[in-house]
Amino acid sequence: MKKYSSIIILLVLFLVSLRFGAVRTEAACNWTPSTSTVTATTCGIDGQSSEAYDYSAGTDDASNGVTLVIPNGVTVTMNTGAVGVPTTLYVGAISITGTGSLVASANYVEIKSGYKCYVTDADGDGYSPAPNTCYSTAAAGRIRKFSSGYRSGRDCGDSAAAANPGQTVAQSTTFTNGVNASLTGDWNCNGSEVKTYATATYTCGACTNGSGYASFQNTTNGFLTTVPNCGVAGTYYTVTNATCRDPAVANCSTSYTTSSVTQTCL
Ligand SMILES: [Ca+2]
Ligand SMILES: [Ca+2]
Image 1: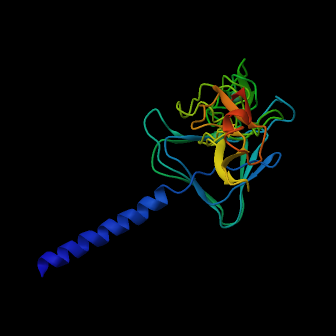
Image 2 (image 1 turned 180 degrees about the vertical axis):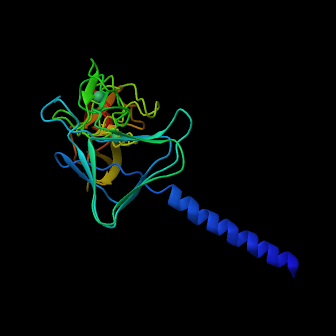
């Protein structure tokens, strides 16, 4: 009986630890400023990481103009950092109203108030590969966070301006993906590579033409059997006759043209 009691106590302790674990690992904040104000929601800034809020009128004004407003009933928690890797909040100013609170957990937490934040943007598309890693000064290959040219979202290809989270057009080449090296065609940086021609669709199907002959019908344009990888050209079949034909006169082999088509991806 004692043995079962011990097991139950251990199980309860385990479940309680899970609950506290869940609190510690709540979602990162990652708010988006509305002009010069950020209104906080209850959340936690991840331990050993940074979140940066800056605002610039135009491309690069004189000071961090963002005020973080923590309203009544909202708690913002800065989770524990480590030696050399403090949990850091960059912001212009902080305004707490009513029962709102900013909780600095345990050790290695810092607030950098009034700092301007420049982030890396080597290809100049407005998206940064590290949007919460701040530099205090302007330089070539950097952009002021939340300035007029800044775009929210992580750049997965900061050496190719067409690769960014705002891309909506499939591209016919590949790029170096800094987030997932295998996704060289993920031009919109959403973590998946979508081929424009995803499956082999050229078909040559049997039909009956009413003459009593088994005949053939071409109905679908596309690649035959396999499709090329992103940025690679392949042979594309275009149907030129979609009617049922007598195979003794003309069959699939005379009912299409081919061309070289490059696979595009997004
Ligand atoms: Ca960029
Ligand atoms: Ca994609």
